[in-house]
Length: 529
Ligand code: HEM
Image (cartoon, rainbow, N blue to C red; front, side):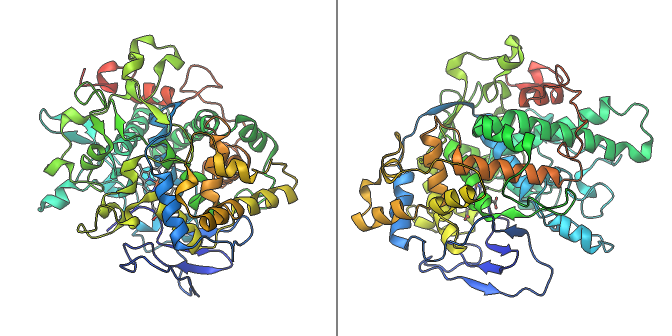
C-alpha cells in the first residue's frame, strides 16, 4: 500500500531514523514515539540529510503536539492571491523531488551510481517518466512507440486523454489503479489532473519539437526540453509566489550559502529533513476545503472530500474504475490565463479559485484525513489524532529530532545569512493565524521557546503577507537550487538555456505550460463547457 510521506528517514551520517505516527508500520496507539537508529548495511532508502543542527532535547511532548495540531486545524485563515492550481503543482513537485525511482526500476544491470541517483532528490520528472521507456519496469507508462506517455479515458461520455491511464487487470481494484510511476499523484483529483497535464505537455513536445532529431535520440531530447522548461517555470513562476522573491533571486543568482555548498554540481544531492518535514510542508496550509471545480461542481461543490473520492489512492473513483467526465478539471478556474494575456481563457472572479494563505492554519478536512492515505485501518475513529495532518507533521519532526525555528535562524546567521529572528510575541500572536490559547501555559511556553520548525516557517510567512521569508524562504530556495543543480537535465548547470515554448525567451510560466500542453484550446482546458 502506498501512502503519503516517508515512514522512516535514512539520514546521511546518522543511519535510519525509524518510527511511526501510527499507520503503515506503526504502533496502533500512536503514543510515545521511539527513535530507533538502525545501522543499514543494505542499500539505503531515500537519501535524507540534516542541513542544520540536531534538535535533541528541544522537542515538544505529545500533549503539546496534539493541542498545537488542533489549534492549527481549527477552521479559518484567509485567501491568498495565489491561484489554487499552484497548491497542487506544489504537491506534484514534492512527489517529483521525493520520488524513489527504485520503486519502478526492474533492470538487473543497474549500477551503484544509478542506484544512488534513483534514491536522491531531483527535479527530473522521474515521477512522470519512471526509469524511462527502455526500462522493463517502466515500459508500461509509454505508448508502443516508446515516445509518448500513455493517457487514460474518462467515462460517460468517454473522452480520451482526460484521465490518468488506468489498469486493465481482472479485478476492480486493478482496473482502477493508475498506471503512473508514483501513485501518490492519484491521491486527489487536483494532483491527478496536474499529472495528466504534464503527460500532455510531454506528448505535445514529442509531436511538435522533434523535427530532425534522429529516432534514437528522440525520447531523451523530448525529456530534456520538458524538464528544462519545467524547471524554468518552477524557478521563475512557482517559487516567487510561495517565497520572498529577493531570497529566491539571491540564491539562484549568487549561489547557495548553506546547503551542500562545496558539492560538485553533478554530485548526487541529498534531501534536507528541514525541507521535507517542515519547509516544504507549507503546501498543507494552501489547501482549500472547497473549490469551484468546474461548471457542474460549482460554488464550492468541488469539496476536498470529493477530490479525494474521485481519485484511486485517496478514494475509489466514486466506485467506478475510470474517472467520470463530469469531474474533468476546468484549468481556467485554477490558473489565471489573464496573466498571459488570454482574456478568452479567463473566468469571472467569482468562479476563480485561490489558494488559502500560507499561514499557521490548515483547513478542517486535513485533520480527518482519509485513513487509507496514511495507512490506517478504515475503522480508525474520525477524531483520531493520527488522522490530523498537523499532528503528523509535528510528530515527524520529533521523530528525527528536527532543529527548531530558533536553532535554524541561528544556524543561518552563523553562515552569514542575516535573518530576523521572530520574537516570542510574534510566535505567540502571529497575524490572524493559529490561536495558541488552547494550550496549557507550560505547553505554550515550550512552543514559544523551542518552536517546531514547520510552525515557525508558517508564522514567518503569515507575518510576511503569506509568502515564506527568513528561515523558510532560505531553506526552500537552497534545496530547490541544489535539486535542480544535481538533476540530469539542469537549468542551473546549463546557463545557456532559454525557454522556447512560451511567449518570449525569458518567459515560461505554468499558464504557458498549460497553454502549450492543451494546444491553446478552451475545449481541452475545460471540456465541460
Ligand atoms: C490535499 C492535499 C494534500 C494532502 C492530503 C497531503 C497529505 C500528506 C500526508 C498524509 C503526508 C505524510 C504525513 C506524515 O509524515 O505522516 C504528507 C507529506 C508531505 N507533504 Fe503533503 N499533502 C497535501 C498537499 C501537499 C502540498 C500542496 C505540498 C507542498 C506544496 C505538500 C508537501 C508535503 C511534503 C514535503 C511532505 C513530506 C515529504 C514526502 O512527500 O514524503 N503536500 N502530505
